[in-house]
Image (cartoon, rainbow, N blue to C red; front, side, top):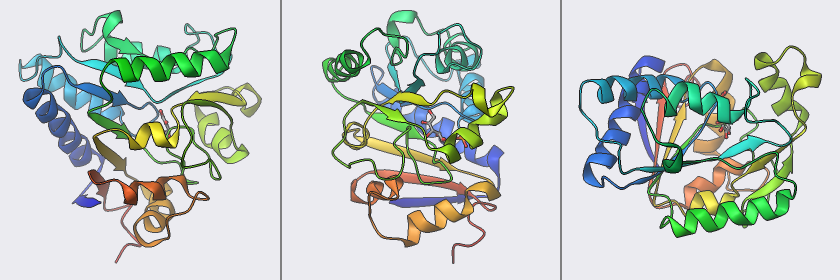
Length: 242
Ligand code: F6R
């Protein structure tokens, strides 16, 4: 893993957006794996700035998101569909056929997982996958203990993850209990991975990622086995890293 140390969230977002833009310049029909949550928001804003000044042509990219809550209608303001529409797809003028998220309201979620995998494969696989990390080490919604050989699947969210995400909902009871997520193996098949980590809340997770063992108890540790991972982290997240 290559570690890039930056001062703060702003610098991290600028750097990440430039890396994504660089990938698209090098390969205009790139398949991008995207994430939601607080971590990539600044990156998407920086990407929009690059887009607005004509610095990137996104007309040929395809995107696949990591995950979606199960049972949550796309129109729900906290769905990842809604997040992506408002913060990414509309601002960057991506056409609906360019973008993909798991359908959390499919009648048969197992079949939806298989469909999602097929779509990723048909697109030629993911060129660059953007990731955040959960305080418990999850990537996508692959919670601690998820098999490293998992593909896209339905997962039961841990109480700690529901607590962390409760900030977006009126009460913790409103946070869905399940999600559909790309599996660890699906993520590991991406040709390149960009992991973003900022803020004090993530410092234990970052320390464990950089210094700890590779084990299913800590899903992000699998990234050490990938040949092309860049971690961009800010000073607060790096506080305990020597
Ligand atoms: C989001 C995702 C999650 C988040 C992680 C960190 O699509 O898959 O793994 O990246 O929960 O969330 P934030 O960025 O809100 O701290």
